[in-house]
Every structure is written in C-alpha cells, then in structure tokens.
Image 1 (tube, rainbow, N blue to C red):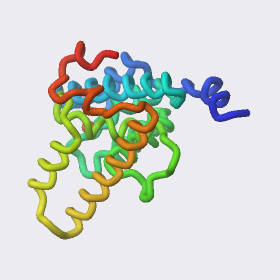
Image 2: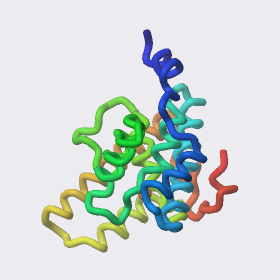
Image 3: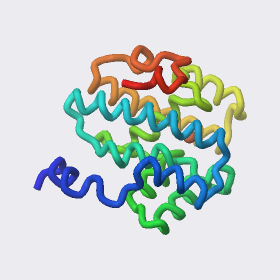
Image 4: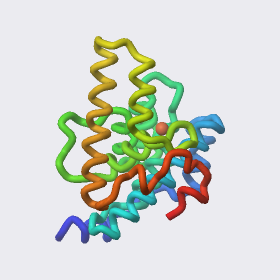
Length: 195
Ligand SMILES: [Fe+2]
C-alpha cells in the first residue's frame, strides 16, 4: 500500500472538524479570543498551502493540517505549551493532531527531508504574527531584536529560523513561486487568505 493510499483510507480518521476544534477551545482552555483568531488565520494559511502543494503534486492530509493549525496554541500561556497542548489532545483521542502540535515550536533537528503536515503547520505559524500575514524575513528580524545576541535562547531561536527557511525553500521548490508573492504581507483578512 502506498503512502497516498494509506492517507486516503485512514487519513481523516480521528480528526476534529472545525466545529469540534471550536468546542475544544472551551473544554481544553478556555483559549483567549486573540489566540483563537491567530489560530484560525494560521489554519487558513496552512490549508491554502496544502491545496497549492496538492496542485503541485505534493499530497498531504489537509484535515490533519487544518485541525492541528486550529489547535496548535490550545495550551498557549502554560509552561511548554506545545507539549501541554499535545498531551491534552492525545488525552481527548486525537493522537495525530497531538503529534503535530508537539513540534509546532521546535521540530526535530535535522528536519526530515520529506515535507510533512507538521512542517506545513510550523511554517504557517511562522507566517502569521497575531492575525497578520507577515514576511518571514521581517519576523526573523523582529525576533532577533527581542533576544540576546548569544546564549541558549539565541541558539534555539536560530535553529527555529533555520528550520523555517529550510521548509520555506522546500515549499517554494514545489510551488515554483515565492511565498512572499503568494501570501503578501498584511493579507490578514479571511478573504485575503482564501485560495
Ligand atoms: Fe501560533
């Protein structure tokens, strides 16, 4: 059985739909409104990326991407929110979503060669500051300004951005277009981020 066949047979199993994600904001949170809005925009960007990738021949599980993007910050504000969110989602019976959420702040290093749902969610999250689509270069500059020039925190930050640009390059290679052109800075309204 090929990977695509596995995905089409089992791909959408055990995934919360958008309405269930909204309900999880209450039961696992409550998640603040600003975080919900951020997550909804990240989901739009991530799903649009997934559709563009599919058109280019890179087939990923859109349901998993959408659910994980909607829920990636479900534990925002708590210590190690990625792992905490992951734990809560696994407990609710969503292990695949939990896995993606667990790595949305820090991917394994080195990043595996093949583009994955987790990488798409990771990238989409970096592309959205608040509810605003922002250029990755701009976000990296802003992040660098906020942290000391050396030390453990800085190293972690640099690893995150190194991963971000590896994934961006991978996505752009599939799409044959620059992400900044497809997702211009400031395209923050739902209409702007629709395919
Ligand atoms: Fe986020």
